[in-house]
Length: 321
Image (cartoon, rainbow, N blue to C red; front, side, top):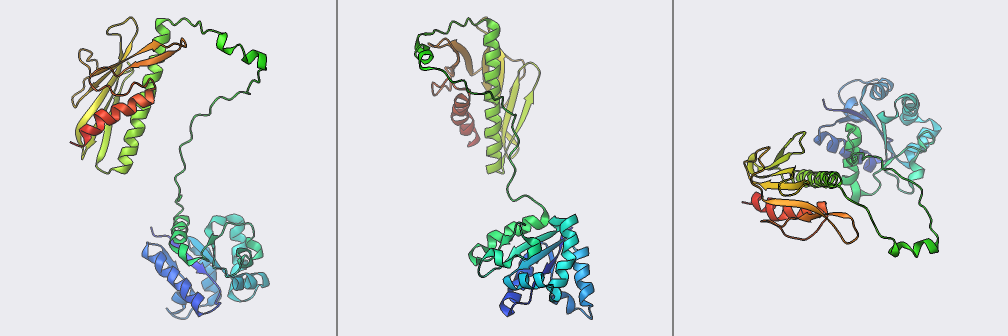
């Protein structure tokens, strides 16, 4: 349903009245049922006080067009503006979001703010060059739709105080070896964790691509056995896909096995295109080692960079043809 909006303003001068009428026109063009006193009084005999009461009570939103003259009349309780100020006080207390103050000040913003509206956010329409920008903001406020998408809330990270070490302790760092012994379970857990990072990167790249391209889409299949399949589509036609799973094909511990194509089967370990294993680097730390098969490109050991390499050399190429 189209939101109904009543506009309160002061009759400062002809130019200001025409601007307010222009605002009504612009709002109505985008589906907002906006009106002002002049549009209502032309329809017949109207009781002015009742018209204002009905506007503040019955409409979904009330826009207050503030100017220096409006602020003066509101503070001195004069005329229609003074009466509408009295009507606005209970609304400010019970439902402040119903009132949307905007300003067309000619000096300073504060000079157009009545006493009872001090401290409230006001949309600044004083600069004509930003009219479209402010009209967009006003439209979002009327329809109660955020103008900026609120990012998803991530997992709260564990934090701890930073330990400060003495200079003598620091001087030993290069002399202390890492003597960690890695068992098969350690390697399997590490590969499971890194495969999860690769999968998350694929989903993020797919989501970003779908936002930028209306023809792009994707489907996923995930099971409890650490097998993941994602199909990439153009106009709902599958162009390629990735089958990602853990399998100990050649070693006592698992590797990340990757298969590409349009017909991927869960549990099929007899054929694959890429194999990513893990190794122990010179610092005695686990790191990825792979992308040595058909489409291997860079030599990165970072799971995100590996996934980016797969995306550019394998997926994007197939999506374009």
